[in-house]
Structure formats: structure tokens, C-alpha cells
Image 1 (cartoon, rainbow, N blue to C red):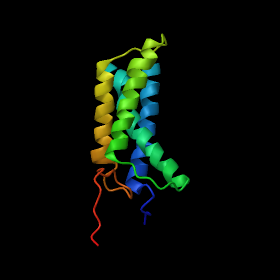
Image 2 (cartoon, helix red, strand yellow):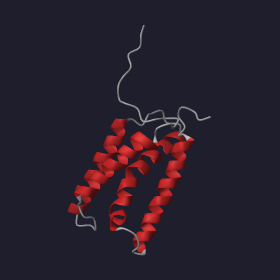
Image 3 (cartoon, rainbow, N blue to C red):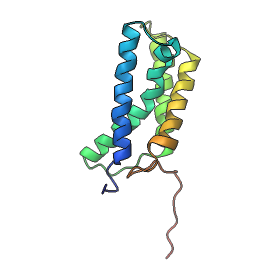
Image 4 (cartoon, one colour):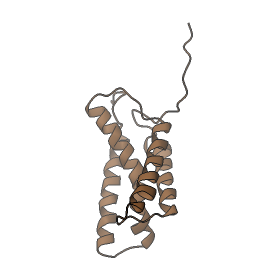
Amino acid sequence: MAHSTDIGIRERRFFLLMIFLYLAIRWIRAIHFGPEFLHFYGGDILFVPILMTSVKIVKWLFNFSFNVNKLEVAIAVVYSCVVFEWLLPNEGTNFVSDPLDIAAYIFGALLYVFFISKGSGDQVQDNKRVKSIN
């Protein structure tokens, strides 16, 4: 049975699946196989779920006492968009800004919030405070 601070078995399985899918996408991109949509947006869709699950793993390993809320997922999306779609493309690196990447980050965040973290030991919570009754 999972502790309340532990990530659930379902989320662990999704994490391993996402890592496998990401590596598969990198491989099929390298051998120029498969649909171009997958080449360009598959990694972007998986980025936020992998990032947020990694945060929960670090939380579990080091026994940190914070929760991953929907606000943190939204911050991860905004951070990803700013860094990968604005800062790095404007710095003259090999990055190219693409509005569909932003849609892929958002889609990945929605997958994480509504499917991947559901049923785990530490679900993504709303940021609503519960008043205690005295």
C-alpha cells in the first residue's frame, strides 16, 4: 500500500511508459521513420508529465513535504513555454519557436492532471484551502 507521500504504482507505470515512449520517439526520429507529427510533438507532449512525475519522485526520495497541485503543473507549462519557445529561440540556439509546441505542453499537462496522476497515492490537488471547523 502506498504512503500518502508516495507516488502510486499506476503513476510509476505511466512514468516508465513515458520514458520508454520518449526514447522510442528519439530513436524513430534518428532513423527517419514514422509520422512527422510524432517527430515534432511527441516529446513535447511527454515533457510536462515526465517533469511532474520526476518532481514527485524527488519529493518521495527526499521526503519533502509539498504537494504537486494544479498550480505547479500550470507553472511548469508556463516555464516550458517561456524557456523553450521564447528564450532559447531568441538566443540563436538550434531551437525554433513553434506555437504547436505550446499546445503540446498544454495537452501533456492535461494528460498528467486528468489521467496519469489520477488514482496515485498523491493526486494533483486543487489549490483550495479547506477551513477547519473549531
